[in-house]
Length: 597
Ligand SMILES: Nc1nc2c(ncn2[C@@H]2O[C@H](COP(=O)(O)OP(=O)(O)OP(=O)(O)O)[C@@H](O)[C@H]2O)c(=O)[nH]1
Ligand SMILES: [Mg+2]
Ligand SMILES: [Zn+2]
Ligand SMILES: [Zn+2]
Image (cartoon, rainbow, N blue to C red; front, side, top):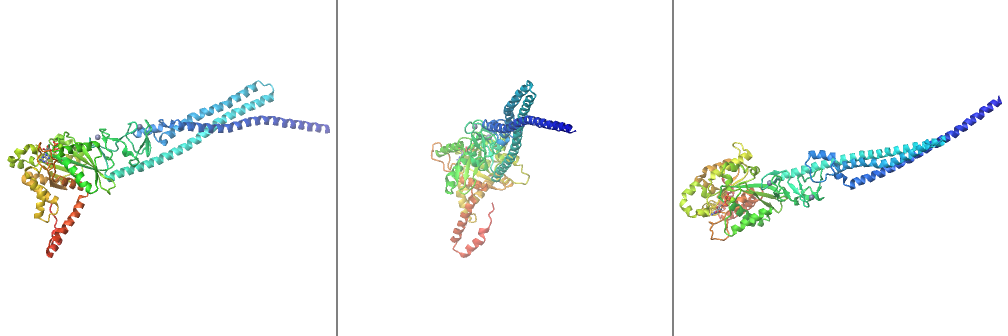
């Protein structure tokens, strides 16, 4: 019995010891496996992070983000593609993600492969081992290396996945913020342009555009959408030459050469920056439009503006050249050449008051009189009639049938010097109304709001100046002190002159069609042209119509100035009256009487 128990105890002890030894041996195997796996996992994380940093810096440094991605392709289907690099959140950011996906795995793969091949070595070793324990350990090592290799993949996967989530969130927020900023800037630009009536309008082909073409100053590449966009909020980077182009005027965009999108002629830098004012000058061939325009503009620039601190300039060098050439002719006693183009070019004149935030850019359209000589030519004027602010209608008194036939004997000897227009006033006027109606679609009974200056020119001929010119106006005011403005006196003198000479219909129609017409008389040359006389021409009365019109369209404050002058004249007049009763009567009654205009 005792002996039996003794055996059992011995057996148990032996089994126990063998168990312990076995489990120690097995544990050593597991320890080998686990150790290798842990080392593999840790190195996996380190390698993945290392490779990831390597790949991501490479992606940014290699400008990998400057190649098109699906996001950019999608975007460029929606917006007009530009020769510029798209912003990071619209292109590069996504490109970097693709680059990371393509490169991190292939590079961690190499590291993983090392562990797998190491594992294979132990596997072969195990296969050829006869000692079972060793065989077991070799297999443990093999399994450890396999696991370590797998961890390499897993850690690379985790690193890339984390990056993807983070990058996506960053790009999405960035995108959203840029879009909001873009929308705000676009809204500001639109409202600013809308409020100040600033538009890009071509003085050559008369098209209006949202934005001109901007020309890269370094490589001359055309940028058609240089504004805050997916290519950059404040700057676009030209993809041809890497030049940074500002997208906003105050950052310097206005200094970049701009071109018309339709006819590609260059647009001066005040177009799209100053408040537009469009004024066509209308009249038959030879009626005296061009001579009037250049003389009136000249008197405005040389006489009126400087005294008031108003700055004037020709933003377009070609316009300045043309103006100076014409002026040279006029100053040497030569008349201007016939205007060649039926579709006119506009002359741009920038006008800015000293305290004005934004100045005006006046477009003066000088078409050849043939523009109003037939119904086809006249409709070609429509493109710029669409946005006119005021009109100047030129009348050559020597083209008025009744006046011309009544004074035939006086006119004939100086016919050459007068060059009477061959087109009747009514024909030119009616064609002007046709274009105006096609542009504005005014309903019956409704009047055109644009101010109309009707200017009878060439008053140097037949002594007209003393009948309807400034001198006559001053005489009229002397005779009737209740007329205190020269332009009021002239207005009624010229109106009467036209009515007396068979243009009563014309005068009535003008009042019927226009809310705000005014009549003027002037002589652009001041004397009859004579090829032998090289003295400069001295115009008479050319300033009034242009001042009146520019005042009506708010470019200058002439009427305000006149108001002040009138008050002073009132005072002089009343102090001039010796009789107190008369003085009181003047203040209470005479000065309050409205003038019929
Ligand atoms: N006497 C006199 N003649 C003038 C005056 N203004 C123009 N003329 C004459 O009229 C001619 C035509 O003048 P322009 O100013 O060229 O006329 P226009 O309306 O521009 O003519 P187109 O360009 O053909 O439409 C000139 O050649 C002068 O002979 C003026 O103030 N006095
Ligand atoms: Mg002309
Ligand atoms: Zn154009
Ligand atoms: Zn460039």
